[in-house]
Length: 231
Ligand SMILES: C[S@@+](CC[C@H](N)C(=O)[O-])C[C@H]1O[C@@H](n2cnc3c(N)ncnc32)[C@H](O)[C@@H]1O
Image (cartoon, rainbow, N blue to C red; front, side):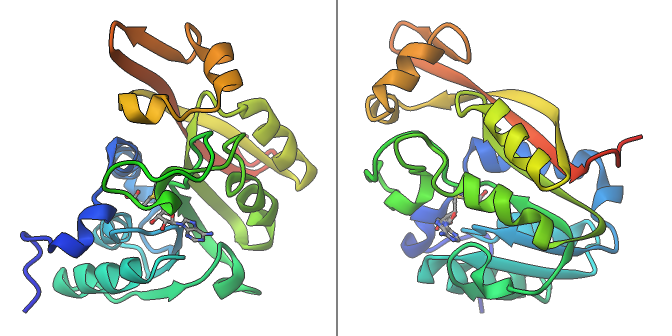
């Protein structure tokens, strides 16, 4: 039987991060967002966010990830915790073409760096390409086709990845975003060394804070809904 307390070495690369924790905190802070909804997570990794959504009473759970290990790991976790879920292997929106959801959650890879691997992770875990937007932009551009009426999305958004550009993309699709919460996340030295230099230069002292060898950055939890939905 699957022991939820002892992750196998195969799932180590999918271990949750500070970003995962911040997203869980935001979901737990407002359980009414989740109770009774059809929930989708893009980039479900370990499956833990889907488990939280199930625990908060989502009516149905759907996850998508590009990595095969994430499908097996997520399904095992959810089964072990007694939640039913469909998890598809595929790229972004492709497995849910034509479907809509009440709540869409994502902690996408959007660290601005080329496609490097950071210790113990796959490059698909955090690399968002040079600008950090390789997945973020298609996610934002596809959202309105997959949100149900009154549907909402909740995502992680690095403050050093142009928030105004995300706002402008969403406006084109009749959506609006607001920052629910901002937390400080630790950025490992080996990761900061891989960050696109022009973004690092522009953001140090703004959204990136260095104390000797220790680097932290602001990260937003962002909610997205139809423009005007917040009254
Ligand atoms: C930062 S991790 C987040 C994992 C999990 N949601 C969490 O918060 O712990 C990003 C996830 O997106 C997945 N991913 C990367 N590219 C993807 C794509 N094109 N389509 C779907 N998932 C993708 C990765 O495999 C990884 O599991």
